[in-house]
Image (tube, rainbow, N blue to C red; front, side):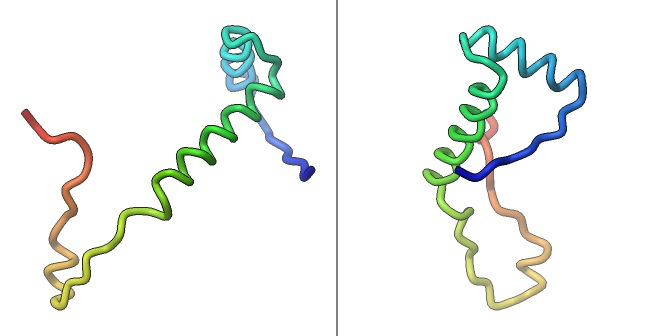
Length: 72
């Protein structure tokens, strides 16, 4: 199994320990769980939003994709 080293500040470590305690995990298990969930969500959404092919480069530069929640 490959190893991964993380450099955390004291504040980040404190937050992670608090979250681990809430989930009845230790620090290492909590970090593994966060990474595992991140990989699963990345796998579900694929490799990004497919780009729309636009012939005119200026239209592509000055137009935006509609992303996120729609306004009410």
